[in-house]
Length: 401
Ligand code: SF4
Image (tube, rainbow, N blue to C red; front, top):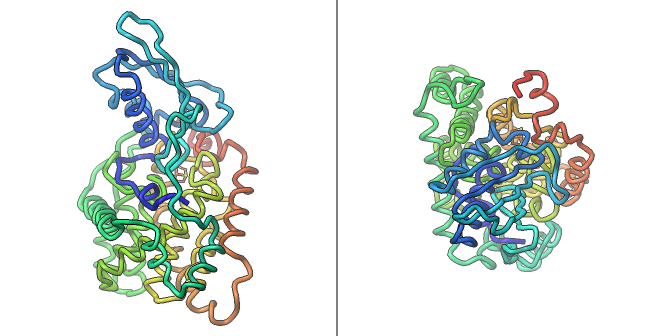
């Protein structure tokens, strides 16, 4: 498995696959072709169908500026991945220097067709959760100690990520107004937070607070603000909401929260390695489902559960998001995405609570690896209308595109 630094990345929204990935691809192309004076870029598959709402063309033009850039939206899908791009690179006399086929494969990661950009090195020898649990059992170590065995400078990096997550919560909680795009959707995080303060029922207050934190980040993401991929931009509100709740309401120290962050990351990494974290590839179960599993694991660690119960919580977090479709209205990462981050956060906390109670009553029959495999297969069986194309579900009902 790759480093957690490849999973948690600070970037700008609204989409890791539709903005961060294309931005990285454009930066790479500019470096590879210093003589380039003009670009034409063709977007394929999901990048074409929801690229406008996800600001893909805008980010490509902005990244390659001042060189002129034209973007066309193709109806086909390239064979290797639903998020394909072809860059045509021209010199000053208008001659074609070269063309490059690039794929945005989720979480802001990109792959060139010919492998120009090598995949990041694996730093963990284990690939599955079972292997990780066997190893940590043998060594008698926690999942956080496992991360420290394989990764250097992690503490500093995790603090940086945690602070960026908390900044995105606090920034979102202070803003009001209308989100960018044709939906004219009102920001509500701040109001939910205020309602939480005023509610008399304690159980409601806790849940409203968690929701407000998730809304805050997801609204920031939808508006092109700074967030952390966890594991993607679309699902970036779930981990921060749960960690911020632990910080503010449960008074957990940051030194413990970075451990929870790392532990959640291991589960995200297992999904990324063995299935997908891309909505265009697997539907929203791959994004929000994975984020829910990660946050459930983090919360379970805060509850001081052992490694196998942490895995139980994560498994439930993903299992009960199986089949979740990706149908962003108008291609904007707003409906259903923002609200779904709040639901994902609440479900994560519930999953950790269930693992704490159920785990001592009976052994979980479904392993985390099994559910990851099932999620992958479910994603394959999902119609492409439900995989970030805005051709089905809610997107079709609203008929904005
Ligand atoms: S529906 Fe889910 S996967 Fe699709 S864009 Fe929204 S958050 Fe991402």
